[in-house]
Image (cartoon, rainbow, N blue to C red; front, top):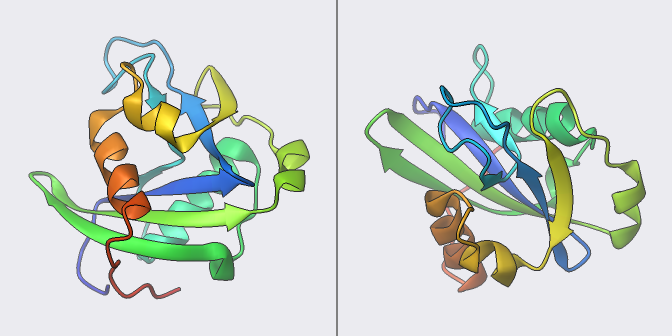
Length: 142
């Protein structure tokens, strides 16, 4: 996990539903107006998990404890390694969600709906499906 990486995403389950953000509708960003998951680029020397948890706090106002993260996997992309994590929080945490300054809105949806949605970021659909299939993850460090 100490190898260089570019960013991290978090499939955050609130109860049985997935926290999803509708990306801004701006032409010069990747996947404008698509459904996305919390996460983003690495800052400083933070670990992949610290990156995903910081981005989640910035984007949804939720502080996810590291022990709520149950799965993580590294993916090699052309612009660097990316991490994808999954975490579970209780349904009551829905009341704590506050949209940050990125994205148009947030919603909770069944994970299968995200996987099948025609306007969800495709690589995150595939990664969520991989997690839900029961494939083993990689070692996760805080």
